[in-house]
Image (cartoon, rainbow over all chains, first blue to last red; front, side, top):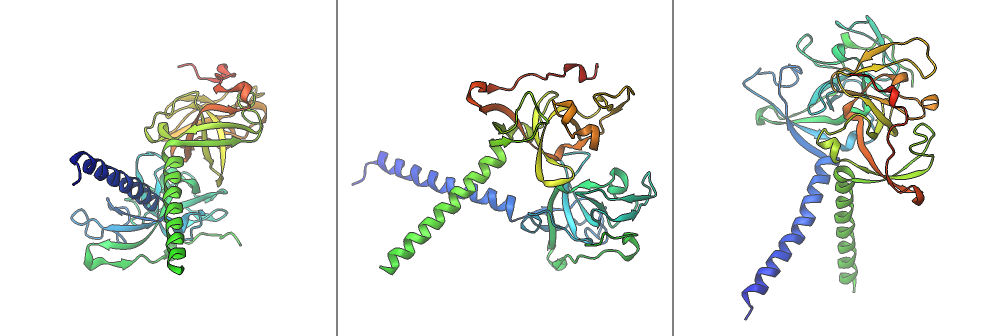
Amino acid sequence: MMPPQGFGRRYMKAFLKGFFVAVPVTVTFLDQVACVARVEGASMQPSLNPGGSQSSDVVLLNHWKVRNYEVQRGDIVSLISPKNPEQKIIKRVIALEGDIIKTIGHKNRYVKVPRGHMWVEGDHHGHSFDSNAFGPVSLGLLHAHATHILWPPERWQRLESILPPERAPVQMEEK
Amino acid sequence: MLRSIMGKTFRLLGYTLQYGCIAHCAFEYVGGVVMCSGPSMEPTIQNCDIVFAENLSRHFYAIQRGDVIIAKSPSDPKSNICKRVIGLEGDKVFTHGPSGYLKSHSYVPRGHVWLEGDNLKNSTDSRYYGPIPYGLIRGRICLKIWPLNDFGFLRDRPNGHRFPDE
Protein backbone atom coordinates (compact mmCIF):
# COMPACT_ATOMS: atom_id res chain seq x y z
CA MET A 1 0.00 0.00 0.00
CA MET A 2 1.28 3.41 -0.87
CA PRO A 3 0.38 6.34 1.35
CA PRO A 4 -1.34 9.14 -0.61
CA GLN A 5 1.19 11.73 0.53
CA GLY A 6 4.10 9.74 -0.91
CA PHE A 7 2.29 9.31 -4.17
CA GLY A 8 1.69 13.05 -4.45
CA ARG A 9 5.30 13.80 -3.73
CA ARG A 10 6.52 11.31 -6.28
CA TYR A 11 4.15 12.73 -8.88
CA MET A 12 5.39 16.24 -8.13
CA LYS A 13 9.00 15.15 -8.41
CA ALA A 14 8.42 13.51 -11.79
CA PHE A 15 6.61 16.59 -13.01
CA LEU A 16 9.40 18.95 -11.91
CA LYS A 17 12.03 16.75 -13.50
CA GLY A 18 10.18 16.71 -16.81
CA PHE A 19 9.59 20.42 -16.57
CA PHE A 20 13.26 21.23 -16.07
CA VAL A 21 14.18 19.12 -19.07
CA ALA A 22 11.42 20.16 -21.45
CA VAL A 23 11.39 23.93 -20.97
CA PRO A 24 15.12 24.69 -21.41
CA VAL A 25 15.41 22.27 -24.31
CA THR A 26 12.42 23.83 -26.08
CA VAL A 27 13.59 27.39 -25.47
CA THR A 28 17.10 26.62 -26.67
CA PHE A 29 15.78 24.86 -29.75
CA LEU A 30 13.54 27.82 -30.64
CA ASP A 31 16.41 30.27 -30.03
CA GLN A 32 19.23 28.43 -31.76
CA VAL A 33 17.82 26.07 -34.37
CA ALA A 34 14.48 27.05 -35.85
CA CYS A 35 11.13 28.60 -35.12
CA VAL A 36 8.00 29.55 -37.03
CA ALA A 37 6.49 33.00 -37.40
CA ARG A 38 3.52 34.62 -39.05
CA VAL A 39 4.30 37.30 -41.61
CA GLU A 40 2.23 40.46 -41.41
CA GLY A 41 2.03 43.31 -43.85
CA ALA A 42 2.48 43.77 -47.55
CA SER A 43 6.15 44.70 -47.68
CA MET A 44 7.33 41.37 -49.14
CA GLN A 45 4.67 40.93 -51.84
CA PRO A 46 4.63 38.96 -54.11
CA SER A 47 7.04 36.52 -52.40
CA LEU A 48 5.11 36.51 -49.13
CA ASN A 49 1.48 37.38 -48.41
CA PRO A 50 0.44 37.62 -52.10
CA GLY A 51 -3.25 37.67 -51.20
CA GLY A 52 -3.02 40.98 -49.39
CA SER A 53 -4.66 41.36 -46.02
CA GLN A 54 -6.85 38.21 -46.23
CA SER A 55 -3.98 35.76 -46.11
CA SER A 56 -0.90 35.74 -43.98
CA ASP A 57 1.86 33.23 -44.52
CA VAL A 58 3.64 31.28 -41.82
CA VAL A 59 7.35 30.88 -42.49
CA LEU A 60 10.06 28.68 -41.04
CA LEU A 61 12.91 30.74 -39.61
CA ASN A 62 16.25 28.97 -39.54
CA HIS A 63 18.50 30.37 -36.81
CA TRP A 64 21.22 27.77 -37.23
CA LYS A 65 22.10 28.97 -40.73
CA VAL A 66 22.93 32.49 -39.59
CA ARG A 67 24.78 31.58 -36.36
CA ASN A 68 28.00 32.97 -37.89
CA TYR A 69 26.24 35.97 -39.43
CA GLU A 70 26.73 34.61 -42.93
CA VAL A 71 24.11 35.70 -45.45
CA GLN A 72 24.05 35.81 -49.24
CA ARG A 73 22.61 38.46 -51.49
CA GLY A 74 19.01 37.53 -52.23
CA ASP A 75 18.30 35.68 -48.99
CA ILE A 76 15.09 36.48 -47.16
CA VAL A 77 16.01 37.19 -43.55
CA SER A 78 14.27 38.37 -40.42
CA LEU A 79 15.92 41.00 -38.26
CA ILE A 80 15.21 43.20 -35.29
CA SER A 81 13.85 46.49 -36.52
CA PRO A 82 16.42 49.26 -35.97
CA LYS A 83 13.63 51.76 -35.30
CA ASN A 84 11.62 49.63 -32.88
CA PRO A 85 13.52 46.91 -31.01
CA GLU A 86 10.27 45.15 -29.99
CA GLN A 87 9.47 44.36 -33.61
CA LYS A 88 10.96 41.89 -36.07
CA ILE A 89 10.93 42.70 -39.76
CA ILE A 90 11.37 40.36 -42.72
CA LYS A 91 13.27 41.62 -45.78
CA ARG A 92 15.48 40.51 -48.65
CA VAL A 93 19.24 41.06 -48.46
CA ILE A 94 20.27 43.20 -51.43
CA ALA A 95 23.88 44.09 -50.71
CA LEU A 96 26.61 43.06 -48.31
CA GLU A 97 29.53 44.99 -46.84
CA GLY A 98 31.63 46.80 -49.40
CA ASP A 99 28.98 46.81 -52.14
CA ILE A 100 27.86 50.04 -53.73
CA ILE A 101 24.10 50.16 -54.13
CA LYS A 102 21.84 52.53 -56.06
CA THR A 103 19.10 53.54 -53.66
CA ILE A 104 15.39 54.26 -54.15
CA GLY A 105 14.35 57.36 -52.27
CA HIS A 106 17.22 57.40 -49.80
CA LYS A 107 18.91 60.69 -49.01
CA ASN A 108 22.04 59.67 -50.95
CA ARG A 109 21.77 58.41 -54.52
CA TYR A 110 24.52 55.82 -54.11
CA VAL A 111 25.51 54.20 -50.84
CA LYS A 112 28.55 52.11 -50.00
CA VAL A 113 27.55 49.52 -47.41
CA PRO A 114 29.94 49.87 -44.44
CA ARG A 115 31.79 47.03 -42.74
CA GLY A 116 29.62 44.61 -40.80
CA HIS A 117 26.44 45.96 -42.34
CA MET A 118 23.97 44.85 -45.01
CA TRP A 119 21.37 46.52 -47.19
CA VAL A 120 17.88 45.04 -46.93
CA GLU A 121 14.78 45.82 -48.97
CA GLY A 122 11.23 44.56 -49.20
CA ASP A 123 10.12 43.12 -52.53
CA HIS A 124 7.21 45.53 -52.68
CA HIS A 125 9.01 48.79 -53.47
CA GLY A 126 7.32 51.86 -52.12
CA HIS A 127 5.28 49.89 -49.57
CA SER A 128 8.16 48.70 -47.51
CA PHE A 129 9.97 50.26 -44.57
CA ASP A 130 13.50 49.13 -45.37
CA SER A 131 17.07 50.30 -45.84
CA ASN A 132 15.89 53.02 -48.19
CA ALA A 133 14.33 54.61 -45.10
CA PHE A 134 16.78 53.73 -42.31
CA GLY A 135 20.02 53.07 -44.17
CA PRO A 136 22.28 50.02 -43.95
CA VAL A 137 21.66 47.79 -40.92
CA SER A 138 24.22 46.11 -38.72
CA LEU A 139 24.62 42.36 -39.07
CA GLY A 140 24.21 42.09 -35.31
CA LEU A 141 20.48 42.71 -35.72
CA LEU A 142 20.14 39.59 -37.87
CA HIS A 143 17.61 37.20 -36.36
CA ALA A 144 17.07 34.28 -38.75
CA HIS A 145 16.98 33.12 -42.35
CA ALA A 146 13.47 32.43 -43.70
CA THR A 147 13.74 29.17 -45.66
CA HIS A 148 10.23 27.77 -46.21
CA ILE A 149 6.61 28.83 -46.31
CA LEU A 150 4.74 26.37 -44.08
CA TRP A 151 1.17 27.67 -44.14
CA PRO A 152 -1.28 27.86 -45.93
CA PRO A 153 -0.70 24.27 -47.19
CA GLU A 154 -1.24 25.05 -50.87
CA ARG A 155 1.59 27.58 -50.68
CA TRP A 156 4.07 25.15 -49.12
CA GLN A 157 7.38 25.88 -50.84
CA ARG A 158 11.02 26.62 -50.42
CA LEU A 159 11.91 30.31 -50.42
CA GLU A 160 14.53 30.69 -53.12
CA SER A 161 17.37 33.11 -52.75
CA ILE A 162 16.84 35.38 -55.75
CA LEU A 163 18.42 38.77 -56.17
CA PRO A 164 16.18 40.90 -58.41
CA PRO A 165 18.42 41.70 -61.41
CA GLU A 166 17.47 45.37 -61.46
CA ARG A 167 18.48 45.67 -57.79
CA ALA A 168 21.90 44.09 -58.13
CA PRO A 169 24.65 46.24 -56.56
CA VAL A 170 26.42 48.62 -58.90
CA GLN A 171 29.73 47.32 -57.70
CA MET A 172 30.21 44.13 -55.75
CA GLU A 173 32.95 43.57 -53.23
CA GLU A 174 35.47 41.09 -54.59
CA LYS A 175 35.95 38.16 -52.26
CA MET B 1 27.61 -5.39 -20.99
CA LEU B 2 27.17 -3.59 -24.29
CA ARG B 3 23.70 -2.57 -23.24
CA SER B 4 24.90 -0.98 -20.05
CA ILE B 5 27.58 0.97 -21.93
CA MET B 6 25.00 2.15 -24.45
CA GLY B 7 22.64 3.12 -21.66
CA LYS B 8 25.36 5.08 -19.89
CA THR B 9 26.36 6.87 -23.08
CA PHE B 10 22.80 7.89 -23.82
CA ARG B 11 22.26 9.05 -20.25
CA LEU B 12 25.45 11.13 -20.43
CA LEU B 13 24.36 12.64 -23.76
CA GLY B 14 20.96 13.44 -22.30
CA TYR B 15 22.47 15.18 -19.27
CA THR B 16 24.90 17.13 -21.46
CA LEU B 17 22.03 18.31 -23.65
CA GLN B 18 19.89 19.19 -20.67
CA TYR B 19 22.56 21.18 -18.84
CA GLY B 20 23.72 22.81 -22.07
CA CYS B 21 20.20 24.02 -22.68
CA ILE B 22 19.82 25.27 -19.09
CA ALA B 23 23.11 27.12 -19.45
CA HIS B 24 21.97 28.70 -22.71
CA CYS B 25 18.73 29.90 -21.13
CA ALA B 26 20.60 31.32 -18.15
CA PHE B 27 23.14 33.19 -20.28
CA GLU B 28 20.49 34.42 -22.68
CA TYR B 29 17.77 35.52 -20.29
CA VAL B 30 19.31 36.03 -16.85
CA GLY B 31 22.95 37.01 -17.20
CA GLY B 32 26.48 35.81 -16.92
CA VAL B 33 30.03 36.55 -15.92
CA VAL B 34 32.04 38.48 -18.50
CA MET B 35 35.66 39.51 -18.70
CA CYS B 36 36.21 43.00 -20.04
CA SER B 37 39.34 43.96 -21.91
CA GLY B 38 40.50 47.20 -23.37
CA PRO B 39 41.06 50.67 -22.00
CA SER B 40 37.89 52.41 -23.16
CA MET B 41 35.98 52.18 -19.86
CA GLU B 42 38.76 53.28 -17.51
CA PRO B 43 38.56 54.21 -14.66
CA THR B 44 35.22 52.48 -14.05
CA ILE B 45 36.35 49.16 -15.47
CA GLN B 46 40.05 48.47 -15.84
CA ASN B 47 41.54 46.12 -18.37
CA CYS B 48 40.85 42.43 -17.58
CA ASP B 49 38.24 43.07 -14.89
CA ILE B 50 35.59 40.41 -14.39
CA VAL B 51 32.04 41.65 -14.10
CA PHE B 52 28.54 40.26 -13.81
CA ALA B 53 26.13 41.30 -16.56
CA GLU B 54 22.38 40.85 -16.36
CA ASN B 55 20.13 40.58 -19.39
CA LEU B 56 16.76 41.17 -17.75
CA SER B 57 16.72 44.96 -18.24
CA ARG B 58 17.27 44.47 -21.95
CA HIS B 59 14.27 42.15 -22.20
CA PHE B 60 12.10 44.56 -20.22
CA TYR B 61 13.45 47.63 -22.07
CA ALA B 62 14.64 49.17 -18.80
CA ILE B 63 18.04 50.46 -19.96
CA GLN B 64 18.59 53.96 -18.60
CA ARG B 65 21.01 56.82 -19.07
CA GLY B 66 24.24 56.16 -17.22
CA ASP B 67 24.04 52.35 -17.35
CA VAL B 68 27.14 50.49 -18.47
CA ILE B 69 26.13 47.97 -21.11
CA ILE B 70 27.59 45.25 -23.28
CA ALA B 71 26.57 45.44 -26.93
CA LYS B 72 27.49 43.79 -30.20
CA SER B 73 29.88 45.94 -32.16
CA PRO B 74 28.03 47.53 -35.09
CA SER B 75 30.89 46.87 -37.49
CA ASP B 76 31.66 43.32 -36.34
CA PRO B 77 28.75 41.33 -34.88
CA LYS B 78 31.02 38.66 -33.42
CA SER B 79 32.82 41.00 -31.05
CA ASN B 80 31.32 42.83 -28.10
CA ILE B 81 31.82 46.35 -26.85
CA CYS B 82 31.36 47.72 -23.36
CA LYS B 83 30.23 51.35 -23.07
CA ARG B 84 28.09 53.71 -21.05
CA VAL B 85 24.67 54.81 -22.31
CA ILE B 86 24.76 58.59 -22.64
CA GLY B 87 21.52 59.22 -24.49
CA LEU B 88 18.31 57.36 -25.23
CA GLU B 89 16.04 57.94 -28.19
CA GLY B 90 15.05 61.55 -28.62
CA ASP B 91 17.85 62.92 -26.41
CA LYS B 92 20.12 65.71 -27.45
CA VAL B 93 23.77 64.64 -27.33
CA PHE B 94 27.05 66.40 -27.98
CA THR B 95 28.86 64.84 -30.87
CA HIS B 96 32.12 66.73 -30.63
CA GLY B 97 35.21 64.92 -29.48
CA PRO B 98 36.82 65.34 -26.08
CA SER B 99 39.21 68.00 -27.28
CA GLY B 100 36.89 69.47 -29.88
CA TYR B 101 36.47 73.20 -29.76
CA LEU B 102 33.67 72.91 -32.25
CA LYS B 103 30.48 72.41 -30.24
CA SER B 104 27.95 70.37 -32.15
CA HIS B 105 24.99 68.30 -31.10
CA SER B 106 22.46 65.95 -32.63
CA TYR B 107 19.37 64.02 -31.60
CA VAL B 108 19.37 60.25 -31.05
CA PRO B 109 16.92 58.64 -33.54
CA ARG B 110 14.08 56.32 -32.58
CA GLY B 111 15.09 52.88 -31.38
CA HIS B 112 18.74 53.88 -30.93
CA VAL B 113 21.07 54.67 -28.04
CA TRP B 114 24.16 56.86 -27.82
CA LEU B 115 27.18 55.14 -26.26
CA GLU B 116 30.42 56.57 -24.97
CA GLY B 117 33.35 55.10 -23.12
CA ASP B 118 34.37 56.61 -19.80
CA ASN B 119 37.88 57.07 -21.11
CA LEU B 120 36.95 59.75 -23.59
CA LYS B 121 40.46 60.10 -24.95
CA ASN B 122 40.84 56.44 -25.83
CA SER B 123 37.49 55.07 -26.85
CA THR B 124 35.88 54.18 -30.15
CA ASP B 125 32.22 54.89 -29.53
CA SER B 126 29.17 56.69 -30.86
CA ARG B 127 31.20 59.83 -31.49
CA TYR B 128 32.92 57.75 -34.15
CA TYR B 129 30.20 55.45 -35.56
CA GLY B 130 27.03 57.25 -34.54
CA PRO B 131 24.07 56.00 -32.51
CA ILE B 132 23.59 52.23 -32.41
CA PRO B 133 20.28 50.33 -32.56
CA TYR B 134 18.84 49.11 -29.27
CA GLY B 135 18.69 45.59 -30.71
CA LEU B 136 22.47 45.29 -30.48
CA ILE B 137 22.48 45.59 -26.68
CA ARG B 138 23.31 42.30 -24.96
CA GLY B 139 23.19 43.11 -21.27
CA ARG B 140 23.78 45.60 -18.47
CA ILE B 141 26.79 45.36 -16.19
CA CYS B 142 25.64 45.59 -12.60
CA LEU B 143 28.38 44.10 -10.43
CA LYS B 144 32.14 44.01 -10.48
CA ILE B 145 33.53 40.69 -9.22
CA TRP B 146 37.26 40.85 -9.83
CA PRO B 147 39.57 42.36 -8.50
CA LEU B 148 38.12 41.55 -5.10
CA ASN B 149 39.16 44.79 -3.41
CA ASP B 150 36.93 46.65 -5.85
CA PHE B 151 33.99 44.23 -5.44
CA GLY B 152 30.60 45.89 -5.61
CA PHE B 153 28.37 47.99 -7.76
CA LEU B 154 29.84 50.15 -10.47
CA ARG B 155 31.00 53.65 -9.80
CA ASP B 156 28.98 56.57 -11.09
CA ARG B 157 29.91 58.27 -14.30
CA PRO B 158 33.10 60.24 -14.05
CA ASN B 159 32.25 62.55 -16.92
CA GLY B 160 29.00 63.99 -15.64
CA HIS B 161 29.41 67.13 -17.66
CA ARG B 162 29.01 65.12 -20.86
CA PHE B 163 25.34 64.62 -20.14
CA PRO B 164 23.03 66.91 -22.03
CA ASP B 165 21.11 69.38 -19.96
CA GLU B 166 17.43 68.69 -20.42
